[in-house]
Length: 438
Image (tube, rainbow, N blue to C red; front, side):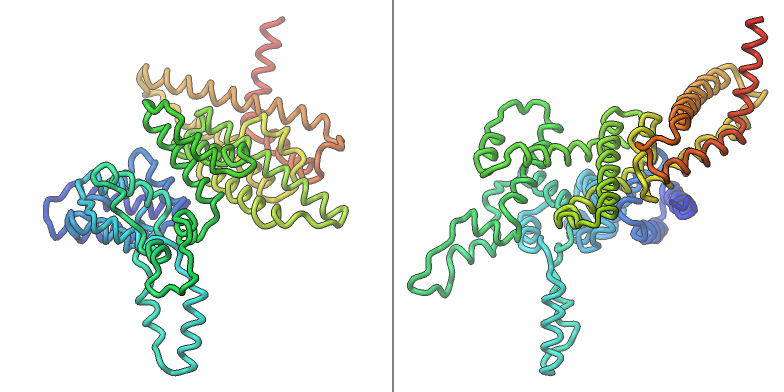
């Protein structure tokens, strides 16, 4: 990610916090939000998690100042997904935005997918007949059609603490149950079927989202010990109970590691290792398909492959870490995303040694020297672990269990290491050890 726009927005935020002029605050916050909206969702998550950059708080304060407590949530949703993420909603509500029954009813009526293809067909038909203009359909786009599911569920959870949630109904489901122009032989559908049809998703997808929300609730509230709801959801699943539960638990686990966003966290390490293994396995399957000229199943090509690849890219772009033990997993890989990503990581890691040494200063006090020494020791241990693992694999370079792309990667990375300061310091340490032994 380019650090320049982030630094520019940080400077704007510092200016906002240091001024008391209302007009200046409005102007600066407007510039701040417009700048944030240019980032993608994943980039904003990384930016928000920086210790020195509390963007969600700034957005929450700005929108309440701009539109007031009663209209803040209405306008935030209107700005779309590039603005309203879960952290921003929490900041808006924390700044005492008003959640009214009317707001929740509007949210339930408008939340859902907007079929752009159907609108395009309508526009084409009306253009041919000369009876409508193109802008009329754009004006009818639902207000909350692109709101994220996690944001919507959070708002409903907060609303449920204030109101009786049973009073909120989905208008579409009610019309289906009580049709105003039904035939004599018309039979109303079951409420569950009407609800799922309005949501435009299968029962399995709906139960999957319910399980995800339930696991998040268990995580947030440690006092919840009863399993009545879990037993109820389990009874609704027709088959493959373990598969549905595992899928939801895996999703929640990966989200928790995203929240930690820390390479030292055990949960982050486990999740990245699991995703890395899946990504390499897919790569091996693709190699076998190309060699034997058979087609992978449609499910793997279109669903699982895309999910695994997107998850791997997200983890690498946001957290970006590998460990020496991962080399044994990656040695069968051939895809450029995996090999090049690892090469970039190790290049930065071994080239960083000269910068670490340059940070040392004779003017440091005792505490700073001690901290610097501890960091340097951890860094040297990490480099040694990488070097030892690379040497082991290099000795087994002609093994059939290693892809040609990975073998070429090992040769290149070893040349890089031998030409770095790490190799020089390692040679000097060996000379010192030999002198001490004599």
